[in-house]
Image (cartoon, helix red, strand yellow):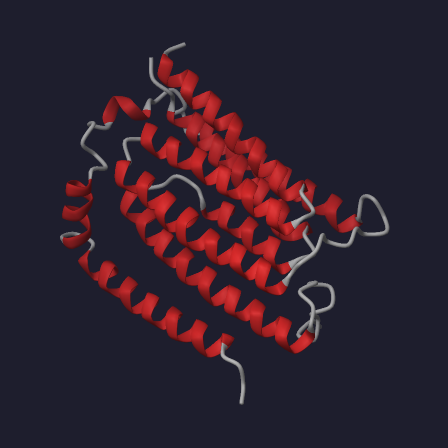
Amino acid sequence: MTAESLVFFFLAAFAVTTAVLMILERSPLVSAIYLIANFFALAALYLLLRAQLLAVLQIVVYTGAIMVLVIFVIMLLNLGDETRARVRIHPRTAVTIVLAAGFLAEIVCAVFARGGAAASVQGHAPDTLGTVESMGDALFGKYLLPFEVTSLLLLAAILGAVVLARRRG
Amino acid sequence: MDVPLAYYLCLSAVLFAVGAVGVLTRRNVIVVFIAFSAYLGSIAGQALVFFVMAVAAAEAAVGLAIVISVYRNRQTVNIDEINILKW
């Protein structure tokens, strides 16, 4: 058990716990705060995977921008706790859990059936894999076209959001 | 001894499954959105993750605009009451 795998298991447990708490929580605001905690754990996991730039972007983009937007909307709409369904275990909930569990089992089986289960991530990745420099090289070289298309997508999203949320009249 | 790749894949599978349960069981559009974001938080190729983040940001902006506009018209964000498109 190296220090790295200890850190991994700690972060993984933290991420799964906050994710489960997030979907069990009835207040949207508390739910959003659990999700922010989850994002911090994911950012730390990205660091373990030698993705330094993505770890920073995860915090800046998700926690800094998207979650602030989500929390802003929750407060703007003044949402209270969700009304609890009359039946404790709704049939829809049971079906969902069964489907999600089946899906999870399928993925885990696929992962181990590939035979690469023992392959280590860190063994192959150089420490400079996810630096700003190498990400920049990739984004402005090999992935230049998708990068430019992304800027168009963001422009369309900005215009769409403004048009949708604008008050009629 | 490093952390095997399979552990990371299993962790993202678990997070994805939790997100799927969240999307399909919650009654509130906002929480569905939060669950969707957790859903996209899987670990993949770095450039791809970069584009996923950009798309998720766009999706969150447009989605929340739709939520605001639905709330303005219907005074509710309960997905059981927003059913006029349902067959």
